[in-house]
Amino acid sequence: MKIKILLSSLLLLIFIVSGCSSSKSGTSESGKEESLKYSIAAGTTGGGFHTGGTALSTVLNDKMTNMKSVVEVTGSSMDNVMLIQAGETEIGLSSTEIAWEAYNGEYTFKGKKHDKLRTLFPGWPGVYMFVTLEDTGIESIEDLNGKKYSSGPKGSANEVYAERIFKTFGIKPNVVNLPTSDAGNALKDGTIDGFSIAWPSSAVTELETSHKVKILTVSEEQKQEFLDNNPPYVWLEIPPGTYKALPDGAESFGLYNLFLVNSDIDEETVYNILKTTYENTDNIKQVWPQMAEGMKLENIDKTTIPYHPGAVKFFKEQGVEVPEDLLPPEMK
Image 1 (cartoon, rainbow, N blue to C red):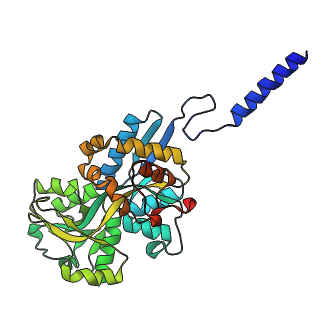
Image 2: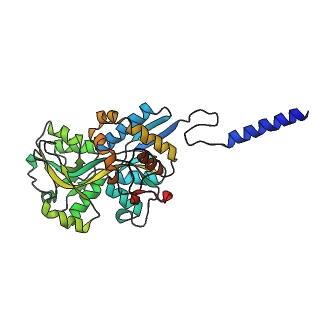
């Protein structure tokens, strides 16, 4: 009888210990790998965010046995940081300036710090462009005054940038907010006179197959005046030959597009996402070459908000030190 009691007690103890244990590697109580269902908040179809989100989702779905990710159509940067903060999406894309403003509770997000935002990895640089057609007669951004113009999807970094440009230089277009693919078609049809987008963009390449496109950027003379009145933007180059409309290339204000993640996701999961992504950059290159180039390890300093601890762990293993100011508060 004593032996039976002892065995029963031992079995009960084993059951309690196994039932109370947890794993950050995504295993369930039965020892099976749990299925992770993550959404990636991207942007409208036809834009770089949606293409980048699709590239990441494809790799995660194909290479991680326990991962199922879905790309969500959103209003881009501003929508995405709010969705991540609220825990309604696990991963999202944002431009550097919107991410910084949201994390610090400044400018558009005055007094509302989005403290759950963390950088997953850098995506690719973008340069803001004002796109129109040669036959509209529009020669400068000032000529957009009074014109019907799509500044980008509501809540996107394109919209924010266009609004700030128009405010700084006293330009007053009749603004609408169309998805990127719709804006290209509306410009073809003459419904609008122009739209905002950031290089690189397949929408502009497609537009050039049937129309003579004109691309406007901020002039060197306007550069300092804009910087004096707005949060920090970077001055970047659109490479020569990228578009027929810019055979010699151009320079203008830009940003870095970032992949962000919610800080509540455990370290091991984020580490595994990074490891899988960086081991399959060839797959990403097939979908979005600019992303494969931009996410190189030497570009980890291109973000404006701290990394997730899982990302720090991965980059450290690659021999790359994350700058002190980009370490998350939970690691300090």
